[in-house]
Amino acid sequence: MLRALVLCALASVAFADDLGDLEKQAKDQAYGAYWDRTKAFGKLAKIGSVKAAQAVLPNCGDEEPAVREFAGLAIADFSEKDAVAWLAATGPVLKAPEGRATAYWGFGVSGNEAYLPILEKAASGGDKDPAARAMALRALAMFGDKAKEETLLAALKDSAWQVKEEAAFALHDRKSAASADPVAKLLTDAAWQPHAASLYALAVCGPDKFKEALPRAQKDKAYQVRLAACEAAFEVGPGDGFDAAVVALKDEAWQVRVAAIGVMEQVWEERCLEPLMDGLVKEKGRLRYDFTMALRAMTGKEMGFNAADWKLWWAANKDTFKIGKKPKEHGKVEAGAAGSEASFYDVPILSDRIGFTIDFSGSMFDDQQKTGSGTGDQKGRLQIDIALEEFQKAVLALKPEVKLNLIVMSTEAIVQKVRAFSKMLVPASAAKPRIIAWANDAKKKLEPIKRGRGDMWDALAELMEDEDVDTVFILSDGGPSYGACVDEKHFLSELHRANRYRKVMVHTVLTGKGAKRFMEDLAHETGGQPVAR
Image (cartoon, rainbow, N blue to C red; front, side, top):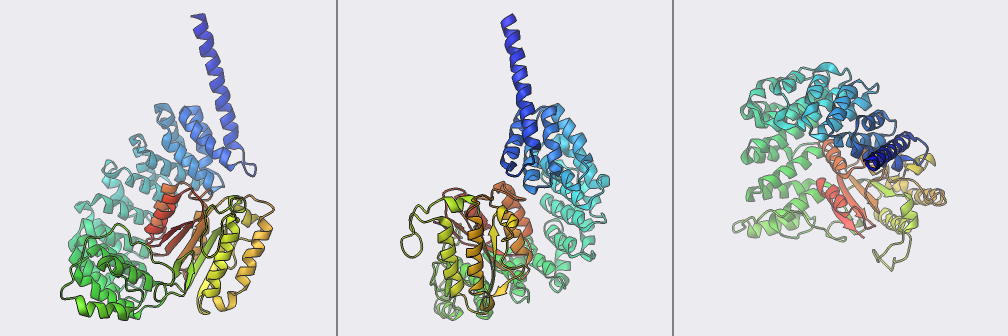
């Protein structure tokens, strides 16, 4: 008996020591302590006690977004009743709005219904920050029908557009007919965001009201509203989607035309082909890729990017053609396909507004290419050298009027002030060869340091801030290792939201062994092409 008591006492001391060490590790804000901190959060969540929760929660308001993300994910893993109760009581009173928002997100990810009353209170005005209230609503949407619908309906009257937008999307997911009238009131909202979100919601909650609103929405001054009208119409029915897409294919905003192409692929009928071919005739730049990939998928034919070739084939085959089964993926288009002159890692470049982000983190300077790729034997060379060589070939092949930019994907690049070639896209005529020299200079500055993490999300977000960008190439030897979104599921979810109206196409180039599925999913999410080397 005494032996058992001694062992229990020793175990308690060891447990306390572990907890104390993890608390210190979680608080360590020294440069480079990021990985240790985030690992500590996960270990604290496994301990699961109130004291462990107390060590994690304050980090939801950390100045580093990557730390906030992992703190929120750790909160989602707490399940011990007392710890959950403490988190529910303390999360909403964190000082920083970002901290409260992160805590609410963690509550939603957890799926623990004990958090529902707290989230409902925050969403109903209990939290004074609009972004935090919106995140509380977003978290409530993760619970589906378990959240009170009256909370979502009340949020439609909030003063902040962020809150109204989230409420509309949450009601869209519930498909509640009772919400049609309240949602319809957002059609006259001063901000385009709630207006656009209301169209998605009405398409499933009140189709008749959506049809009434559609003609006006298709002429709205905000392209985002016109885009939402097109995409939402398909949720009413394939016929409605087809009719709306025919209108949207002629829209002046390229994002709306991209949405229309996507709707035509959803409709997936023979009658979609001719409007797509007509649209291809008028396009230049990136949308030639979108139109061609849709036609290629729907016909099973490879005609390149020339509209005349497609029309010639259609004239000879339209009377007998029967559309086949929809493929899971578009497949690849090889470099040199008709109509493309430049390429990057064998992905044809049709866009004339391109953002590149290349991984300059430590591993790119350390790891050698394991296999040959591109032209010549590249085996044994550093991945960063191969990447810059491929970038140079792509840039030199671009036409003078094409605009481009390069952002270095590395936290150390920010410290060394070699983050971005330009704030905005630059014509190739002015960028060549300055951008190539700049990239090589960045390499020289970072190579002796051989550190820095791959902040993929932050680099992508920076490129997307330039509204002129319609295509992005991401090159990395693995997945994200720093930034606002490191968790792969979270990254893809945030990209879906951020790209809902932007419609940027992302092509990915993976030069290492890790994160292959993630890089494929990232490209496919945006209609882009993944490459692995």
